[in-house]
Length: 51
Image (cartoon, rainbow, N blue to C red; front, side):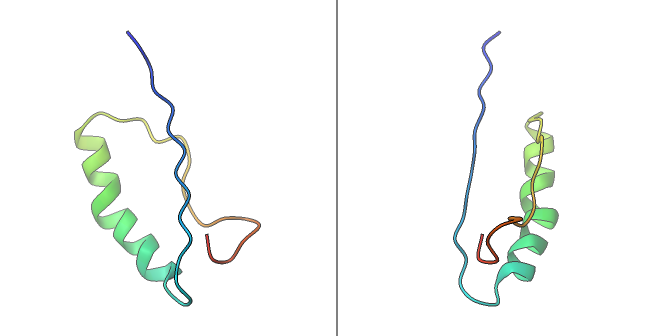
């Protein structure tokens, strides 16, 4: 079995972090779980308030 590691980084528009995080939690994460993908970590950047 081959494995794939994917890193995603998004630069967000001002004041959109909360809405983006909500969409990830409500739409993206359930979809990824349906496809049996293991998400190791996610969330706002610790060093950049726009990421």
